[in-house]
Length: 173
Length: 193
Ligand SMILES: [Zn+2]
Image 1 (cartoon, rainbow over the protein chains, first blue to last red):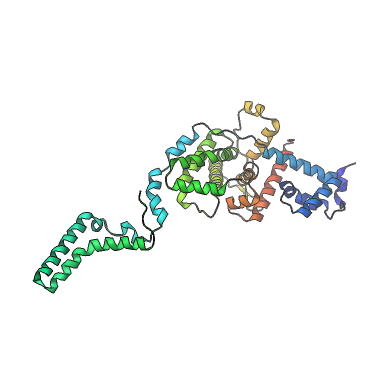
Image 2: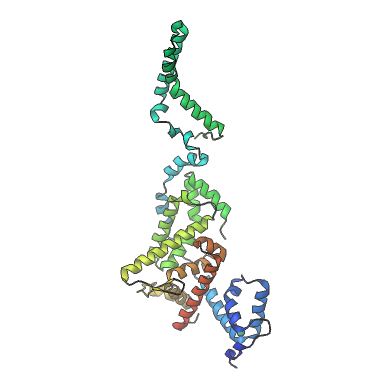
């Protein structure tokens, strides 16, 4: 007998043919909830037409799942690895690790202020002024150049202290 | 399917510039990405170029990878989009017409001259495989990608939703329509598989 003739009858499990066909893909995917899956199973057992649909769809599923895989060419990795910007990643690694607030970054202070020469010169000026002050020159106007001389060193020190304070001390290397 | 935590560890090593970590990612994903590209474009040379470009792009954009998602999802998203763009660009070279738009806004592929595999390869593999390959090649790019993510990469609906950044319902509907279209195309060509 022609299975299509059965399309209209409910196979007695709360599922008619259109409903069953609607559920077939999820049924085969295994994503249908248990009760619904059982209803489809029972309907398929009793309905030749839907069973034929099921088998045809299952053949497509199996065919798609079984498409042969190809081996990538042997020299595949070389071209990719040759273009990775390792240096950039290495350079950024420490910055990325810390996510330091920008005012605590070394770059925040201009290079000339960070330079050792600037800081040594500043300290020398401050020391000379302090000596003159201690030697009894005693003039208040000497305080200003003294503090200005200390400036670069103080800024660098404050920056270091701030970084330590927020627990973001730069790891060596 | 792919080990998300293992990937994250390796990615963090990549971000420190460790060459071995990049090689590990390649070893893990070279096959899946190359095969996805191959099924998308059905040409081994184009597939190699596309897959290499995908990895190069991914390794250059590593800082933009959002660790909230699986690395594999991000990688598959970039690969799918890269192949879809390639197919569109190729189609534009052949046609100045706009694609026909289907009911859900999906573009339908206009039939293109398809070089296909060499005749001897068709004979080597089973005829059913060759027929299925031919039909997949003629699917619209979006349907092709989603079908491959499900059946070739064996991703779940949920994983595909993360890859394509689409709602789960849309993913299910699209996969169902893709498979229905495959079945229809097989029937239209009187292909039995
Ligand atoms: Zn039925």
